Amino acid sequence: MSERKSWPLYEVFVRGKRGLNHVHVGSLHAADDEMALHNARDLYTRRNEGVSIWVVKAEAITASSPSEKDPFFAPSGDKVYRHPTFYAIPEEVPHL
Amino acid sequence: MTATHHDVREPDLEAVFQATIDADQRIEPRDWMPDDYRRTLIRQIAQHAHSEIIGMQPEGNWITRAPSLRRKAILLAKVQDEAGHGMYLYAAAETLGVDREELTEKLISATQKYSSIFNYPTPSYADVGVIGWLVDGAAICNQVPLCRCSYGPYARAMVRICKEESFHQRQGYELLLAMVNGTPEQQAMVQESVDRWWWPSLMMFGPADGDSPNTQQSMAWNIKRHTNDELRQRFVDMSVPQAEALGVTLPDPDLRWNPERQAHDFGEPDWSEFTAVIAGSGPANTQRLAHRRRAHENGAWVREAAQAYAEKHS
Ligand SMILES: [Fe+2]
Ligand SMILES: [Fe+2]
Image (cartoon, each protein chain N blue to C red):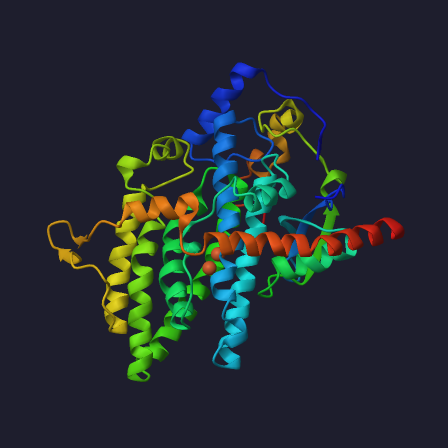
């Protein structure tokens, strides 16, 4: 085998149809961004699964720590007043 | 990916992992997991990926000789799907920290295995139909429960794959329907093919439960949801009425409905054949690996050229 570095890993995101967010569908290897897009089309949208594709080198993604118990998410854990159900409103008040 | 935070203390990790499994939730790539869980998944997903890739060959054999443009287009799409399945699965394996290059090397050096079924030859066009019906059918039985596998990326890959497999099975069955409604020669081709593929298809579920030492641990981890024998039984029960509708005979003198069990009794596959094929002496093992190795080596200049082009333009 040659000493060639392997092609970088790309993560692939597909917008299923207009009005939806792009969703992560998987990953692939490609030599460059353009090839990654073409490979993503061939691999993840063989049956009209998408109207738009994003590819990004996996190494460019910064991720939070995996555990959902992680203190990283703690700041939102005790702020129940951010949810509409926190507020008691009399039932007879309409449209609220 | 790079992590910004670091994790909980070691002793808690095992408990968190087990609680996640016990709650029937999914383990995700950067979660802590026991080394054995990781190793088991890498082996299983890699083997599964290799099977999809090698699985292109038996049918790919017929693409240039398909009997009509319609059949050729269908077969091309089917074989292309199998390549896609291999790619989804290699991608899932990579989330466990292995490298795709390394997996390819392990396949072509025969240090990792693939499904025994793809080491049988395809001498007749009826084999394209029977593979779709029985081989993809057995694969579906195996794969549907894997959509609920505890490892998230594997489960998600299986969801995609299962959606596509149903086209595979139906195109195969439709092809066979056309043949059994054709000439006596065509009908005989179908029966001859079924005679060759029935037992190897039953072997796709792996050894009998008593001889499958890893099953218990895999089930405890929610990787596997059913034993080999349970899935084999399900496959037999599904196949019998399908065979009747085609008017073909499944080549097992012990196959009959058992009203007490509400299931079919059936004969024992020849496990010595299974062991031999797994060990490398099936009818087409050498050919399959040689073909895969040749394709990989012949593609080297393309990979290098694309890399050089990318470096020049970055
Ligand atoms: Fe497949
Ligand atoms: Fe398939």
